[in-house]
Amino acid sequence: MLRFLTAGESHGKGLVTIIDNFPAGVKIDGDFIDRKLVLRQSGYGRGARQKIETDKIEFLSGIRGGYTTGSPVSFFIKNKDYENWKERMDAYKPVPEETKIHVPRPGHADFAGSLKYGLDDIRNVLERSSARETASRVAVGAICQILLNNFGIEFASAVLSIGGAGSKNGSDFNSDAFFFDAIDLFDNEIVKNINNSELRMPYPDLEGKAKALIDKMKTEGDTVGGLIVAQVKNLPIGLGSFTQWDEKLDAHIAMSLMSIQAIKSVEIGSGVKSAFVKGSEYHDSIYYGKKGSDFTGGKGEAGSFYRKTDNAGGIEGGMSNGGVISVRCAMKPIPTLMKPYLDTVDLETGEAKKAFLERSDICAVPAASVVAEAALAFSICYFFLKKFGGDGLDEIKRNYEGYIKKK
Image (tube, rainbow, N blue to C red; front, side, top):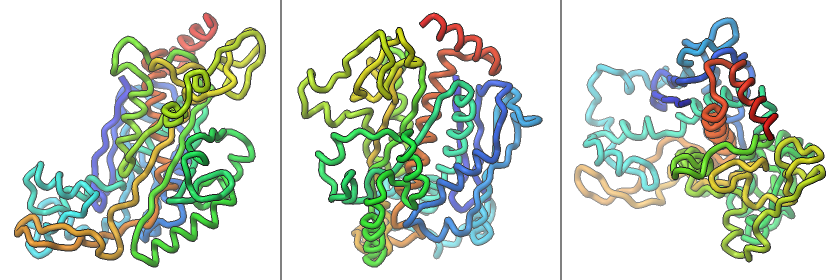
């Protein structure tokens, strides 16, 4: 089965990634991957680190002549900031006692990680738990998207809310304005708006309010989170399975997105809405015999099944149903604050302290939307290869075409 491993620290030499069981014969577009990496670094409210790094992928194995070979794909993403940290991050030099960190930041992995591994320096936790690791995941997701593009499968993502700014009309966030509204990220106007937005927001009237909130947080030395959405369309019916708990597509997607740093909730389709309406209002009726709506299953041709709504978010019973899969996530405010608001303790002495400052962002929600899209792409690719897998792209195409013809 498709899998990947990442390694590397935030201020180490760089990030190393291995993708295993990726098929041969896939033409790799390095520029596409690098554009995704640049997009991850962008966004209003990012910190000074993004001005240092210019992420680019460097393949180490598994690709020759522009095509995957079937061997493990490995790549390296350099940390330019390592030059400023190489003395402190040296693999062999003893760590000076005065540089060790004993004060955990609430909301980070510092506290539990230090106690779990018996470490006397919190830096050994924060370096690996840092969201810098998501650069690797964005590259993995981009490679998965390149494969899936051969089958017309498309992905998109956006920011729906920064703090309190999160409804179509630009009013303050509330459940009626957000949770009950669907959005089509593939609509031409929406795509244009997202691409023109520093915050990757689909509605221009939200931009000013969101930026003002970020500026306010910067002045106060605080941070702000938000809501993001990732979508995928043109999927075949039947990815995933109802037969076992760990074969369910939505379960895998939820795991992939919940594993992103600072993500605190994942919603498939109109999941929250389902708790507030009747079954007759929520479930997506099935039709047959004519071209359907934007949520048409299959190819949407005469004689196909289709839906007029997509509250299920493209997944029923753990399987793709042909609709647009839509996943919404909540990102918490980054817990590294520019001012000492949070109480904590020294793990060595038990003395009361204030959380220490480590260079960070005010708002990384736009970046999180890019990572969410990548995480969704990996989950979809995992189940796509499980369903249609072969050693090479041509074999996968034959399997896919045979399945589609049956439908």
